[in-house]
Length: 110
Image (cartoon, rainbow, N blue to C red; front, side):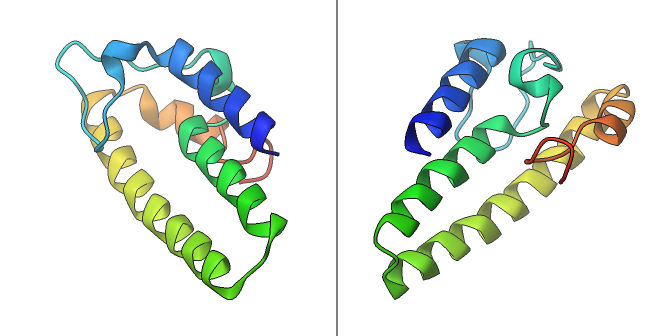
């Protein structure tokens, strides 16, 4: 699972381009809507990769603290991606159509 998460993250970084990567949800002035690479399968592959990697870490040794931290991460990323989607909707009119056809984190599911 950790390798899968790492591959997804690397693929997303390459598709997005390092100049567009931000730690906080913001869209750079020169930013563009990326819909290729892993973005043709899920809208937030970087978040998905973080969740897959940390889920592997959590289930490897499912201590209560690890479970609580993972659930907290899920909630944090959920809030972050909802905010980011509002920014994307405001900046890119075509995002609305994209989000109707592409799932958030799990291809074909959610």
